[in-house]
Length: 220
Image (cartoon, rainbow, N blue to C red; front, side, top):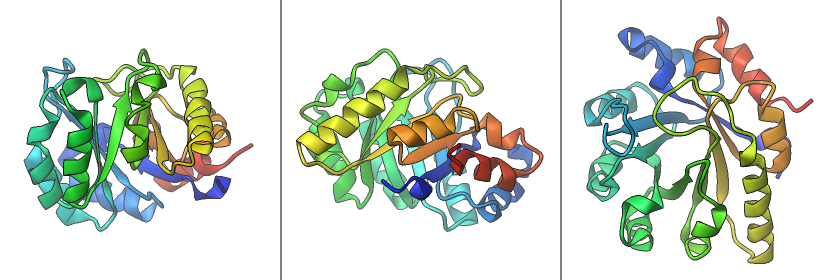
């Protein structure tokens, strides 16, 4: 992978929701490639974020691809609505469904890229049978549920393991990393082979979104 092809996906969870339209336009102008949506149900994770109404609003404010991470107990019930709301990437946690391969196929049949999300404590081997069917893998570098947590470096080994599996098995999928990422951490992830970097508080707490995004792309 060319290191300069990494995609930056700001997570609007850390944006100012009272100025949502301005925030979306600002990150779009700042060079974001994707907009990341953290969908939490208050059940699979303790926090509750936003639902279809906010996703619909965001989809009307930007032409950037939308990347929805379903931290929910019933992801299969979100597929149809997310497809209608112009979501491009849709990831779920495999342990939340009895037949993850079937859900992957349902997501892809709706024209979206299907991803499996792994929490820090879950080994990549759980995806052995799913990897040939996935469009991307979302590696969590924090425990899901809240923004602003400290990054867990265990994710680096997981990137290497996924890249090795990709090469050995002649597979093609993107690797996305989300959780506690700033400009000090991002270069190591990119160097390991990450394709998509999700960043929330680092970008939205910065007084210059464009500078923050540029700093995430740069490899020292």
